[in-house]
Length: 212
Image 1 (spheres, rainbow, N blue to C red):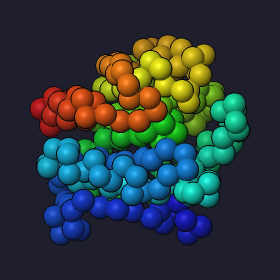
Image 2 (cartoon, one colour):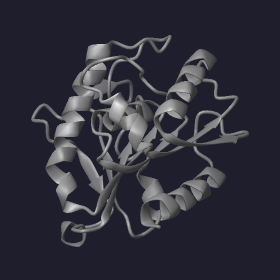
Image 3 (cartoon, rainbow, N blue to C red):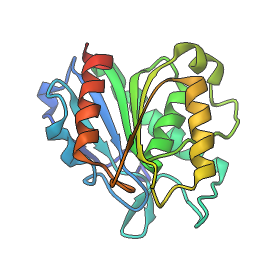
Image 4 (cartoon, helix red, strand yellow):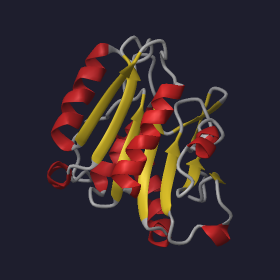
C-alpha cells in the first residue's frame, strides 16, 4: 500500500468489464511485488476479475506486508496495521463485484487469513499457497464468527518446504482446521513455490466453491 492508502494494482480486466464479476485478489509473498503472481491470472477461470496488490513496505528486491525476522518472528501491531490498510481498500471496491475471493502466497497467505478473520462473512473462499497463519489474538479479529462460517479454504504446500518451520506449519494446520472448511493438498518437488498440478487444483477449487 502507498502512503496515500491507494494500493499499486494490476488488473486482468479493464474497468468497463469488471462490474458484477467475481473478484479474485492476489497477495504476493515477502520480497516480491504485484507482478509476481499476476501470471496466474491467465490460467484461472476467465469469469474472475483478477487484481494483484503490491504490499506497502520495501523488503529486499520487492515489498512486504509486514516485517519478518530471520526466524519468522512477527510484530503483532505490524500485522494489524497492514490488515487494516488492505481491508480499507477492499471495503471501497468489494461492492462492485458479485463475490470476493483471496489468494495469497507465503506471507500473502498470512495476510489473506488476517483479512478473513476480520470480516468472516465477506469472502467466498480463500486460497493459501506455501504459507502460514498469524494466530495473534486481538479484538479486531472475529474468530467466533469465522468458526461458524466455515469459509472454504484451499491450502497447498510441499512437505519439504525449506522456508517454513514445522512448528509454524503445525500451528497453522490446527488453526485452519478449527476455523475453516479446509482442503489440504501436499506436493512433492515444489519446495517454496507453485507447480502446475497445484494450479489445476486451484482452478477446480474455484469452480466448485465460488463459481459452482
